[in-house]
Length: 359
Image (cartoon, rainbow, N blue to C red; front, side):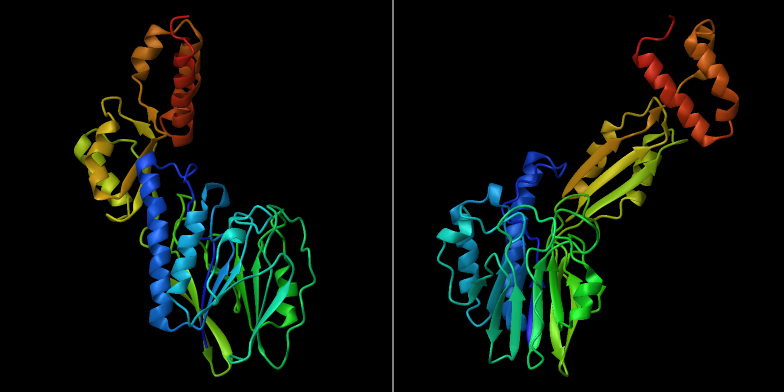
């Protein structure tokens, strides 16, 4: 028996919180759909018996009925694979759910909003699952069933086992102690096995810069009667963030070369460069974005640096006011202590922007 376990795909998501430009956000939205289509091809190629989607297949607030129908048509391409869908907090199975009006093929089962068991006699498998019908659960709204010792038992949950939360917090020790052969989780967007057989696949494609690292799905194989999960990297792109301290850099060529070294990203990736440190006032950071953005699918440059100051001139011009006194108080420490230097420059930024010079 072969199982593909995925979750948190978020088809139709508008990416408004992604920090991407509108054009890049729309392209990534389309890429998520293309990757999901490729996953259907992966189901065919691997001959998976079961495809588990552990919540948040869609972003309901952005989806249309035509989007749900498109997914249903994808499932028609894999008629020999049992597709099991657990609805999550972003695509809850409420009375107004778009799932309700779509004719899904016979190989698709959407779990109801109560714990249910789906048996596949030919595989000797019983899959237990639950669909959300609202956006929050402060606790588990059902009793987790006892597995059938005569079958292979799988539990599908869209929940939070990493913390106490309003997104169905579940105690992982309790889950591990019940004795399921595999627990397919969703909700957390980073892949990870919280126990050997209790796994989050993470989001199929990363959704924004908070989701760095590898993304894909879990392939579960039956090895001598034991279900063995294995993560498969499958995403078409990455979100990569790098920090560059520009203190001491005085020319554009060095700035460009250091930025390239810092950004471990390729032409298919979304890259973010965070500039820190004390920046030479003669350097215009907008040129850096112009030079580098062609190397990535998208480049975001966030300048958190502090502009350098001619402290001697600034003190001479303001020796009789608060700016001069501030420089005098920190100048000695700033010469040898980087934190003091940043404090001095950040303070000067605030004082000068507030009109403190020569006052």
